Structures are given as structure tokens and as C-alpha cells.
Amino acid sequence: MGGCFSKPKPVEVKVEVMGPDKEKEREKESLSPNGKVSPVPPCKANGSTKHIEERPVTIDLYQNPKDMVEVAVCHVNELQDGQMREVDVACGKALLIKERGEYCAIGHKCPHYGAPLVKGVLTNGRVRCPWHGACFNVATGDIEDFPGLDSLPKFQVRIEKEKVMLRASKQALQSQKRVKRMARCTTLCDNSFSSTSVLIIGSGPAGLVCAETLRQEGFTERIVMCTMELHLPYDRPKLSKSLECQIEQITLRSKEFLSQYDIEVQTEREVLSVDVKSKVVHFKDGFKMEYNKLLIATGSRPKPLQCQGADLENVYQLRTPEDANCIAKLANDRNAVIVGASFIGMEVAAYLTDKAHSVSVIGIENIPFRKVLGEKVGRSIMKMFETNRVKFYLQNEVSELRGQDGKVKEVVLKSGKILRADVCVVGIGVVPATSFLKQSGINMDSKGFLPVNKLMQTNVPGVFAAGDVVTFPLAFRNNKKVNVGHWQMAHMHGRIAALNILGKGIEINTVPYFWTAMFGKSIRYAGHGEGFDDVIIQGDLDERKFVAFYTKSDEVIAVSSMNYDPIVSKVAEVMASGRTIKKRDVETGDMSWLFGKGT
Image: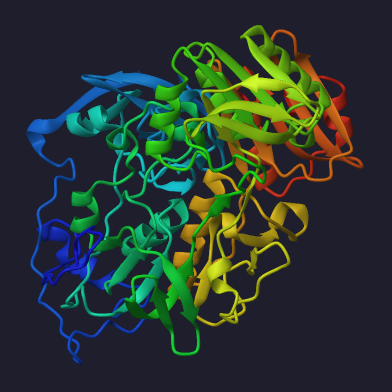
């Protein structure tokens, strides 16, 4: 317990709720939703339940007087309602906000990838990041929508002689992020003991956010996260965008962090089956674990290439940091072939263009991204790739991979074309990683997805599912059951699952948001465009500066953009508010209706 090891070993945990001495009593009252005990029964060590008396832990909450600075940042009438301003405060910056006549101040950078929030969207007490859509409460700095794990620091604001005075910690100004206060486990457990209160299968964003949310909500029982991965949770979207990244650069939470908050991660542990009647998970290595509540967040697995030679060396399905590093090394000054014009495949192709001797992309569609972004946007992106020396072989498939000394050397297409290949990356789609559940009694659809309700519950009481493996009711599309394999959505699934493991009855209500990056250009996307019948484009596709609205009948159901921030975040906020955007609203080219007074 309290560690992040692939092979469990006994350890005694002494734990407490994090907080300064003066807040100890208040924190003890907030340990769980009912203020007294966690609603999930504790794990048992050797047949008995033991608790440890809490002891206070001192954490720097930016209250050291020597660390504090206070400056006048503007005149009281300088900002209008609904405006934001990035202000200098001694050794750093803060985001000053005026809303409903009141001033407040929070960190100025999104903790996810550092986007300037002053360029984001302020709506009804929260600011949305212009890059990837994360949302933060302006009164508290707490993260309310994703991606990302951390919240923002909040700074003190007061008015003195018609000046807006801002008081902040130097440390907070420099870090620009804050970990929400979290509980720790208050149960003595031998972590080789095969019982846990909450078992999370999968270590992606859904699983990690679920574990952290449980602790943030005061859950003090044992949490175990098991994964087939070799590594602790990491930022998977970076693999295809930066193939040479090292695991240390993309790890989401360190071993020390997870240990500090008693989130136990067991790596290299594959689940064989789940027995929902006895509440036991069986692992491939023979180990088994009882659970009280279960979250299934195993994500997806790539579809294999079905042809002769698919098992040759140097043929990769990008899945791990090791895969990414090998692809980058093998492609250096050599010939790379990408099978599949998917987002991952195209991101890999873009990354390799200035490193490989040649980059070829094979796809079954006539235009990349046509089904998601539309024909015109897809064609514009394709031109950008062709300008960067990428050759396309579309409306085509692989017939055979030929090798030499066991390594791939040629890719043979069904058209008869033969491509030289020193490395081949296969990205032809994914399927949900749920095969181990076939005999479990947990409902699966014909494609292997797990249907869940708005609480992320499966058909089995006490069993929840989240992330790429589920279909769920999408609120802004009239609760249509959908599968959304986005990084942001997996975060939100994990949070909602955690809240409902605790019995809070919170329904999911968020707008899907994703992004892709190629050649230094980013495409942002919000909504769910499945079934769109028209695309309204404003801007210039040739100049790579545009916004595209995807409509079905007379309603806008999704939006994408390039070099048009923060339009996608603004549309996401409108959708999140429940307001319907009509096709006629976007056809004229006048988008002033989207914006208020702005920054």
C-alpha cells in the first residue's frame, strides 16, 4: 500500500487528511460526503479493520508572510464586466477578472500545456482555455472541465483608494498550478492482501482522475489501480506528436505523488476475467483481488494489420513510449510508411517529415479526415502534408509486407504499387479493450463497447466504466448514446464515475473537445459531428486560418478551427450552456453574436 510497484509487497500506511493545523478540525469534518465516514466499506487487513489516529501535516498553502507580495494592478474602473487582464505581480503574472461588478484573480496559465488564459473565454464564473478547452472556476481556481489534473492558484483582491490591490504568494505566481487538497487512506492494509474498496482497471486519464477525485472528495479507503502498462500513467497524446519524448517528460503523476496520496498502482498486471457475483477480479499471473466498487477504464487497443508479413520486425502499432522512440530512430534518414490516415497516423507522418528520407501515407478514404472534418477541410490539410513532402496513396490498402532478414523492406499495395519501407507504422483504427469481460455478465454491445448511464454505471450494481470503452448519453445531442474517444472526455468520465462511486448522483454533462497538431499548426474541435450533412466554412482554407461549423438539418453540432482561437472554446461554452446554435447564425460570417465585451 502507498506505493506504485508492479509487484506488491507488505507496507504499513499511516495516513491523514492534508491540511494546516488551524484547519484540522474542519478538514476532519470533510473527509467524506456525509462528513463522518466513507460510504464504501473499508478493506480488511487480516480479517479486521484498523484505523490510525490522524496527525497534522504542514503543507505550504502560500501563507508565509515573507513569501507574500501585494501590488496595485489597475484602477477600480479600468475593467468592465466580463473582461480579463493579465497583470504583472512582482516575480510573476496573474489573471485579473471582473465579473458582475466583482474582481477576482487566479493563475494566468492553463496547467495543462501552459496556454494564456487571458486569450480564453470567460462565461458565468469560469474561464475556458483557448487551446484544449479545460475550464476553471474563477472564484476558487478549481478545475471544472478537462484536460489536465491540476487547478489554478487563487489570489486575494481588495479595493483601496480606487485601486485594485492584488496579494499573492511568490511560490504560487511561479508555479501557476495547484493540487487540490486530498485525503489519504486511514486503513491499515497489507498491500499484498487481495481486497480493496475501489479497484480501477486501467491507468489512463479516466482511471487516474477517478482515483484523484475520490481522494479530493475525502475518500479514505484503499484504492488500487492495475494496468498492463510498464509505466505509471502518462500523457499518451504526446506519443504521436513528439515521438522522441522520454517517459520522464510525459509521466502525469510521479511515484512519490501517488504514494503520498495512497493511490496504489500495480503495473504489468493483466486482467483475465471479472466475476461480478463474487466481486473478484482474476489476473493472468494467478493473482486475484476482491473489490467493493469496480471501475473499468481499459481504453482501446489498435487493430492489427491482416496481411502476410504483418509480424515482421520494424512494423509498429504506436502504443507505448518505447514504440514511439523506436519509430523515430528507425525512420531517421530512411523510408517510413504509415498505414492508415487516422489522426495518430497523420501526426506521426507530420513529425517524421523533417527526419525521414521519405514519408508515405496509405489510406482507404479519398481524403484524410473527411468523415470527421469534412471534405474541404480534409483536402486543405492534405495539401499541407504534400507541401511537406508526404506522398499519399489513397483509396488503397496493403496487400503484403515483404521483408529481408526478418525486417520489413517493402509494402505492397493492392493497386500493385510497391513502396520501400524501413519502418512501417500501422494506424488503422482501434477496438475497445474489453474482451476479458465476455463471460462477466456486464453488458457489451456488438462492437465490444460497454453501455453506461449518465452516472457512468454499467448494468451491474457497483461496476462503473469510463473512457474509450463506453457508450454514454451525450447531453447536448439529446442524450444520444455515443462513443467519444477523446482525452478530455476520459478525464470527465473518470471524475463522474468517482463521484457516483461515492453515491453523489452527479450526471455527466460536458461538451467533447479534442485537438491535433501537425507542422506547428493546431486544429481544435468541439462538439460531436457524427451525421453532419453540411459544413459552413468562414475564413481562408488556403491560408490555414478558418473556422468550420458542422450542421445537421438547421443545427450546429460541432466546430473546428485553425488559427482562429478562441472560437472553438467559445462555441463549446455556448453548447455547454444548453443553447442551440442555428445554421443561419453561422452562414452570414458575422460571429459577433458569439462574443460579449471580450478582453
